[in-house]
Length: 63
Image (tube, rainbow, N blue to C red; front, side):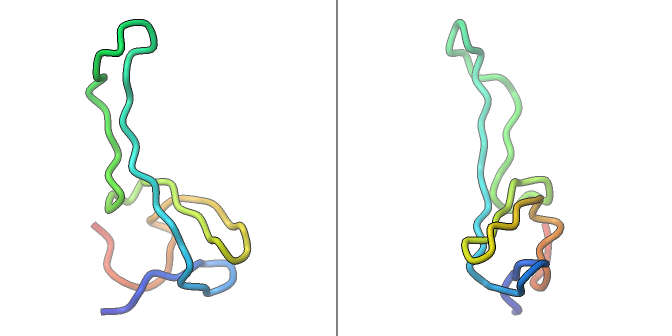
């Protein structure tokens, strides 16, 4: 399996973000979440500072 890489600099030092949403006033969970393996998860490169979505990362297989 190939590792995911930054589309800008090719570094494998990339991150993805998992997110959950909650109602601001009640704290109730809002039925929306993004998991780290989802294509629309926020992604970033620790080496060059690139940011985008997981689907833009090169290599590997996408969910």
